[in-house]
Amino acid sequence: MLEMQNLVLRFGAQPVLARIDLQLAAGERLGLAGPSGAGKSSLLRLAAGLLAPTAGTLRNTFRHPVLMFQEPRLLPWRNARDNVALPLRATGLRMADARAKADEWLARVGLVGAGNAWPGELSGGMAQRVSLARALALEPDLLLLDEPFSALDPALRRQLSACCHEEVARLGAALICISH
Image (cartoon, rainbow, N blue to C red; front, top):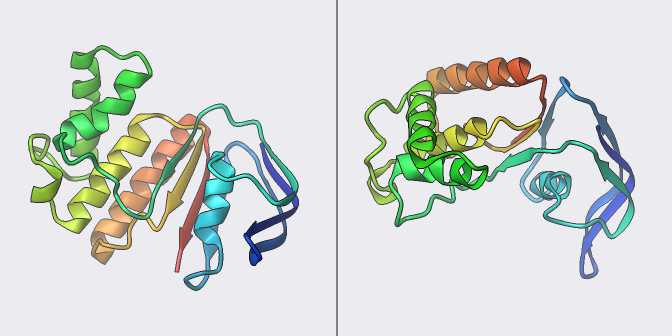
C-alpha cells in the first residue's frame, strides 16, 4: 500500500505539492496528467523514496518499487543488454541468466537484436524502450512510470502500454503512470 496523507513538498520556499492525499493498493493503476512543473515527477520520486516530504505522512509498504525516469538514464559504457542486466545482477542473478532475461525483455519491447547497441547508437525512442525493459525485468510490486512513451509513435505506445498492463497484472503490482 502506498499512502500519502496531507503531503506537502517544498524545494526551499518553492511549493511543489500541497496537501496531497492518495492511496494505492496492490493491483491498482493510477494515471496522472498535468502540465509541466505541476509536481508529477516529484510525486513519483516521493513514492520511490528518492525524496522525503516536507510535511504530511508518506507510507509505502511495497517492497520492490521501480521508477522509470523521464530520461532513459542508460549507462553509456554499457550496451543495451548490459544496461538491462546490471540491476538484475544486483538482485543476485548470475551474469548468463541476467543477460538472457535482458534479451527476453528487449525482445518484448520490440528491440530484438539490439542488445549489443551502445546508448549513443540508439534513437531516443529505442533508449526509452531499453529503460522500460530494465524496469519491467526487475518485476516490481510498484511500477512508477514518468512519461514512459513520450518519444514513441502512437502504435508503439499502445503496444508498450499493453505490455506494461499485462506485466503489472501478472505480478499483481500497482502502477502509477504520469503524462502531460
